[in-house]
Every structure is written in C-alpha cells, then in structure tokens.
Length: 346
Image (tube, rainbow, N blue to C red; front, side):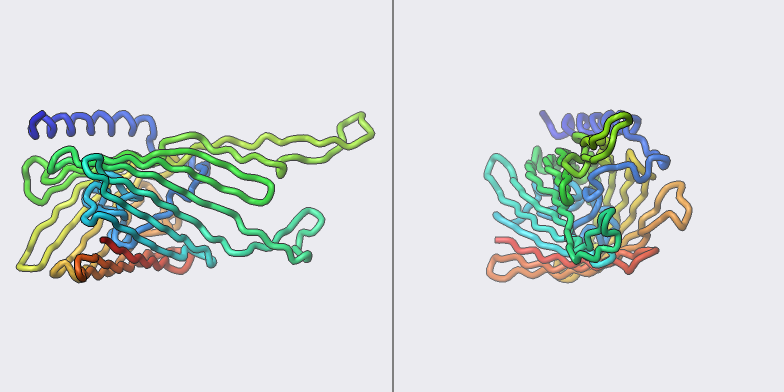
C-alpha cells in the first residue's frame, strides 16, 4: 500500500471512528460523578502535563503510554525508563513507573505502573465513629499496563495499551480491564511540521466492588434470630474518552524550536474539553512549556484546573539520555499540583 493510499485510509478510518464513538460516548454533564476507576484520569508525565495534555499528536517515548500509546513507537533509545511523582491534594501522592524496550521488527513494548498513595486514614465504624481505637487503613489504587506500538510507515505509527485497574479498601475490592488505542501521523497532508493524533481511552469492562463489607447482620420481620444479608453494589462504567489533536512544530531560528498544539476531548461521563499548549526548545537542551484547559459549557466554580506550566532539561552523556521535567497545574480549591519526572535511556 502506497503512502498516499495509507494517508487516505487513515483519514477515512479516523473520521468514521471519531464520529461513531463520539455519538456512542457523547459528553454528558448530568453523569458527572458516576464514573468508576477515576484513577485512570490522573495524569502522569510532567512534559505533556505542562502543555495541558494537548500534545497527543507529538508525545513520544515512555511518557506517551498514558497520553497516546502510539507515541511509544518513537522511542529513541533501545531501552528507556521514566519515574514521576505528583501530590494532588491533602497529601495524596501519585507515583508512576514506565519502561519501554525496542523489540526489533516486532515494534516497541512498554510496561507501566501507576499507584496512588493515600497515606494512613483513621478507621471509623458504627460503634467507633470517632476512630478512638487508633486503627488506620490505606486504600490501594493501582493501574498496571502493557503497551505495544509500531511504526507502519515513516509517518504513521499506532499503539495499544492494555490496563488492569485495581482498587481496594478493607473487606472490599474491585477490578476492571480497559485498553487505549492511538494513532499518530507525521507531516499530515505532506505539510512539514503538521502532526495529527487520535486516541480512544479507557474502553473496557464495568467496575463493581465486592467483598464482606457488603454483608450486613440484621433481623428479618417475623424472625427472632439475626441473619446476614448481602447488599448488591452498583456497577459503573469507566471514564471513556476520545481525543483528537493537531500540533505544529517549526524551527524559528537556529537551535530554536517551537511547537503549538491543541486537543479536543470527548468525555462520556462529563464535560468535553479543549486543551491548548506550547513548547519552546533551545538546542534540544532546555524547554519552556505552558498550557490552557477550556472546559465546555461549565461554570467557573465547576472547573478545577485551567492553567499549566513547566520546564525541562535534556542531556546526552556517552550515549545515555537523561531528562528532567517539572510541571505545575493550578487548582481552584486546593494547592496547585507539582509533578517531577526523571527519564533515562540507553
């Protein structure tokens, strides 16, 4: 198949996929707060977060596992790893580890683990509502992923990320499976510097908690002895998304590169968003980034995040790549989020 035919097929497939899934998963503000597995929405990767999450057309390497798995195909090193940490609010930390490996003609493989650390929470019960026992617990929220990405041509790359979502509290837990699938197209329409990306996220099974916590001891009418009754918990959908993005990159002077990008996000259990971002890079060494998030049809008091910013450093020493990225995301009702990422490649 020639590049021209691949181009037309890709655009046709993208339009059909986006139209069909947009109708199926149209944004619905009335369903805000009904999603399960919302840990899937917590971002990782300081570079892309600093641009407001607008760079799905150009995200690359291990960071791309979260934003658009097709970007993993652009892994520059034979093996690469990244770790990041971010405090979101009330001492809740989000920790992330991602690894990527080139597998020859097969493509690129990646694995990732994201864990949310809630710290110790005081245990309260009906008989001890003030938690005077001193007992504590900590919920477990973990998302693990296995990613595969491949270059189809020198311009088109695709990727899929399979995820296991696990959540638990004492005597109750839930598990779900989901996948992301994405595509990136470089120099769209033979226009140098114009890149296109599309990704469908969190398509998978519903999530339902189960365990002895849903068993209650009570008396049934007309029966003298107490019995155990099981309450049936609800089954809820994962927060599915469809994102469509475009980026433009250009060298504005020697050793000075500028990229601007935008994304439209269609969210099945909330409001749609437009995200915009920019990155200035000097000598592939120092980067300055910024982003803006526009939530569709929302009152200002209902919008938690709007602005992002960050910096990055990249250095190659004896064929070993080192990268450090920092991003800041403002928060209307809590302290702003600070994320730090460290990347290394061999």
